[in-house]
Length: 91
Image 1: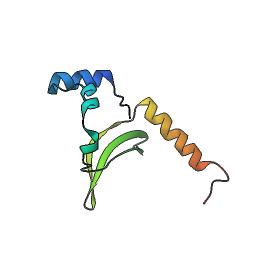
Image 2: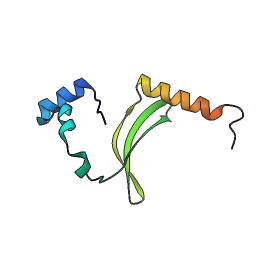
Image 3: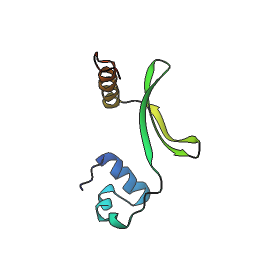
């Protein structure tokens, strides 16, 4: 499977940690272990959409990232919200 990433974030990671994202291609993915599942969500707060990345630990959500949603995330949210509200889709 191919990997993709933001080149600017890769450069920053390379500078800060000595690990450009390109190196992830060399990981032995078959030997990797999933240690936790992470989730990403976009939800409204105080009249504006926000992005949150989190995992579930026990009975709690552990927040790893929380920020204002960017334009792409807003568009994804709006499309999903419109699809959910579409007539004839009631369960």
